Image (tube, rainbow, N blue to C red; front, side, top):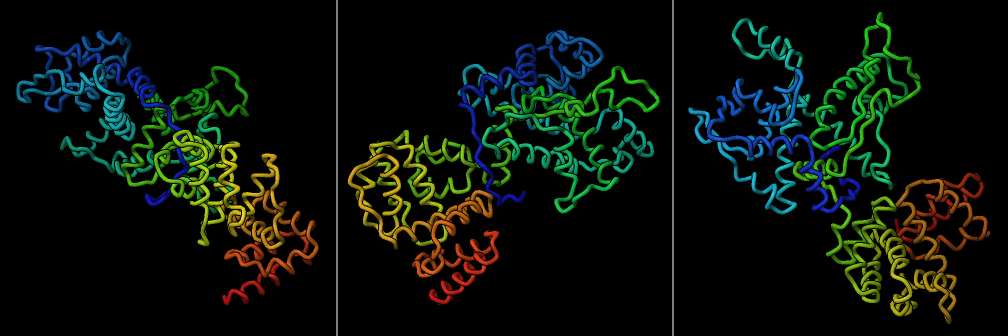
Length: 478
């Protein structure tokens, strides 16, 4: 995924709702609690972390117990420092005070709260890319007694590890925004790991690749366990029975076909917001539904051209809600004109948008009945809405609209089954279709006829389409 990619639009929750979610995450709520707990007697080390003797008190303040209590309290404190909830006053003395950001959690705007949460997310993502503490201790000890980190002994490349996690989260984002029902179904961990390991052109993964996928799953299992408390994901971990030694008896017999055993992950609405923000900062074009609501109709029709149907529908509704129906219809029709390559798809999106306007759009449609580019579209709309006294289209208008419709479908869906059915229906209903179609003065005539020749299963009809495409190109001088 390059940073020039245009991603499908995200359907975000309102910021006030996301801010409430952020405040309730264990990571941020613990950090805020420790920031309020800290006082004149609180001491930190040179790195800003709580000194060891204060970790038990911090853990008690958070209600934590068990062998991980001190580590969890230390992480919460580190988040508080990194996000500005706590500020180090004197590095030599190790004294601290409440940071300016702490008041934002109670008196700031939803955007202020989300800004603090994004800082917490960055801290946790950084931690998730670091090997376990035991591995770090071994790597330092392996540095020939120098006390320096031996990355070769650890077999850890910080940049590669961060890039791997970013790639996984990028694919999870695409899986979430790319479907009409965004994020409804959790993603199996093996599928997510395979999406960054298995080459696209590999039909059957080799044993070596499968082993890499298995290793990636185990890394991701640890990482998603860390990312769930910050509110990025909902995660069902890998069944521990799968990680038991081969000579050990599993704790329980579980169905091997149960995909949930191998881990399931889903982006939360807050996580979707967080990843989109990170993608935007990295230079990606990551739109959100509602981005086009204040822009012109030309931006709406062009901007929704590559949107999935449900996202395009939602974006168009946002746009229409801010305008009077008749004025919106006229603006849409004006933006739909053109002979450029994107014009057919603009007219298709215009037609879909007008279906949401309702009867109030009728005067605007009647105004373009004689328009060469919009007259056919207008007649279709008026007929579908039961309008009276609609003049019949000429044969030239029917053929022009047909070419325009197929061109729009090609741009929207490529060689889809739906388009194949449309092509077959056209050839079946009009026996002399290709004898007339090549003469249509539409810029996309030759391309449409070539596509029909490619898509039609009947070799004889496909040949007719290709011959007609050749005539069209000759007529256009191409």
